[in-house]
Amino acid sequence: MMLTPEQIDAIRDAATKLTDPISSYLISEIARRISEAGQLTSTAAYEVWKLQNLGVSQREIKKRIRKLLKVSHQELRRLLTQSAEVGYNYDIMNFPFAQAVPFAENIVLQQTIAAAVKLAQDDLTNMVQTIGFVAPDGKTYPLTAAYKKACDFAFEQVATGASDYNTAIRQATKNLAHKGVQWIDYQSGAHTSLEAAVRRNIMGGLGLMQEQISRQEHDSLGADGWEISAHAASAPDHEPIQGRQYSDAEYMALNNSLARRIGTLNCGHVAFPVILGVSVPQYTPEELAKFKRDNATGIEYLGKHYTMYEATQMQRKLERSMRAQKRKILVDESTGDTEKLQIDQIKLQVLSGEYKRFSAAAGLRTQSERAEIANFGKGQAARAKSGYARVATAANSMYDIGSGEKNIKAYMRDLPLRRKIQSDQVITTIEPGQFRKHVAGTNEYKQYVEKLKKQGKNGPSRLTVSADEAQALVDQYKGTGILERTNDGVWQSKEVVTMHPDVIGVVVDNRNGAEAETTVFKIHYGKRGTHIVPDYPSKKGAKGRR
Image 1 (cartoon, rainbow, N blue to C red):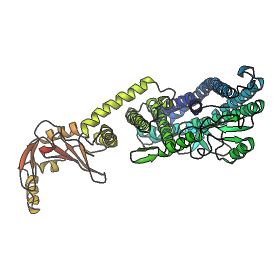
Image 2: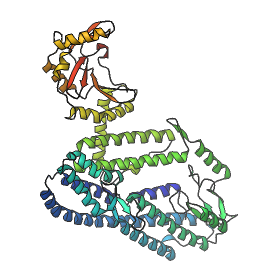
Image 3: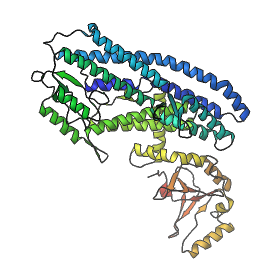
Image 4: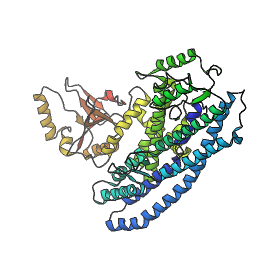
């Protein structure tokens, strides 16, 4: 039963998304409930909330899953039936001299498909009934238990003061956002993502159905051998055997020797019946050799070589990363975490840009539908793009590292630190003693002059603004300047403000004593307070360079 690599890819994509509505619903609903639990501050209130909400929400979740599962069952039936029809029609087309029964009239074939659909639907129902997610303690629990543990964690972290609300909710939903809904195998204790487990199960079941149908066709058409399909960018374990014809015995021995059997559809190959010496192979030896050469030649991207197979796998990896990032955005929206939402929206756009660049470099067609998830619509995509545009504007105004992408990367790297500076975690009040060191006529200034003289230096630089004006400058510009770092990337608790329009003092070159009025200043953050120091006017308008 012959399916092309493109058709197998399409089936695999559809199988991946089969339970997507269930996963997206659960992620959003559970994240919303966890955020509610974190808003309660007393044990009594939380216990009342649990009594009123957990039981009700669990019933709602189960009801919604049953409804979504019906839709998934319908889609699964369509998926298996269509793939069987396409493959069957292709196979009988290769035997024009044989009298084949039309697809709809082939009773044995229809019975085989019906049995495969029933088995696949039962497996899907069973898998959905054994789902859960990774709780804050890093362990995977069934849905109800994991749900309760995450809510308990959020409440306890906030109520005991161990974490602020935002931190507690992020910790409570982190594994839900990162790893999604999990399928739990209670016999082995293993767990994997629901989408991966369902895809693997469906593709394996579809492969078995194909083998049964192909065997029926093989016997009814009088075939005595098999041909393994071929395609560009093959995986290395299947590349040497693809595109060749084998006798029945040879094919059975070969397939049984493979770690990844042909026909499981977890790769892009299938086998179809042939009559040896009569059926013309799809590809000549020269064409198969070219597939192999082109695969090995591959591409170079950012200094790394990829075979074409590796390039397709990297493309799939980026698509999975974009889907995972969209799940994080669903969690952010459900918990109302606007700060993390912005960060995750930017990361999504960065991933999208990398996906487009890599695909173009590899000569691979982008397939944005592979990065789609349920409940993430055009509105969310538009908001992510507009948020990215705002960040790009801000990043390009603050950094000059060589490209827009590098500027954004530096901006996102520094964003948590800038927010920390702008919060109450950093003392930003002017420390009077340090301020007076740069005010001519004060005792602190005179002492500083003497100290520098003993070191053979000129200075210090002088401020011409008052302490209140200096405080206003810190309040206005804190977290917006060039963050000074060591060569190892460690922040030195200093930032240079280059965009202020008015003169704030006189900078003194400590080597030669040259003086110049300046609008540029440096903010020094300390354990006891903050102070500002005039800096060189040549830095006016400068941006971060690393």
